Amino acid sequence: MTSPDSAFVLDCGACRLRPWRDADADALVPLANDAEVSRGLADRFPYPYTPDDAQTFLRMAVARPREFFAIEVDGALAGGFGIRHGEDIYRLSATLGYWLGRAFWGRGLMSAAVRGYTDYAFRTFGYQRLQAMVNANNPASARVLQKCGYTLEGTLRRAAYKRGVLVDVWMYARLRDEAAA
Image (cartoon, rainbow, N blue to C red; front, side, top):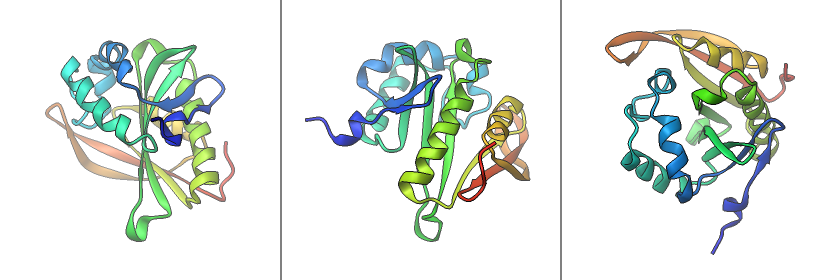
């Protein structure tokens, strides 16, 4: 049986956000198995990225369709998008995370996805704040957030350790009452 959540599709103009499917595994591995893609992401996004990694991720993502989304462009898998809903005193906030396969870089797709999901999340969940943390070695991700009306709130100095290097992390956020860029 299909749940209502598994039918969710958000049209973001240049791309669509939809629930992950088990059938995405074959397309996921070559997109995710890229050192440059994983460079700006947490270590839970492994490199090299194997078919077993894809199966493990898809088991989790398919079970949580309100948190993890595939980014689709013209019917092709292009990347991933996720939201971590805040809890307890942070219940009116959420944290975004995203990645895009290298073949899809430079086309404005992630800006479309972040803009579309930001608007959707403020309308649907009643959030007052959406935020994203960006490794300082990933300025393209920071530009995406800036284009979508997110504000740099601060630098978490040497907050991440990626591939043997300490990296600063930038905290971006957008509040519900702030107009989009």
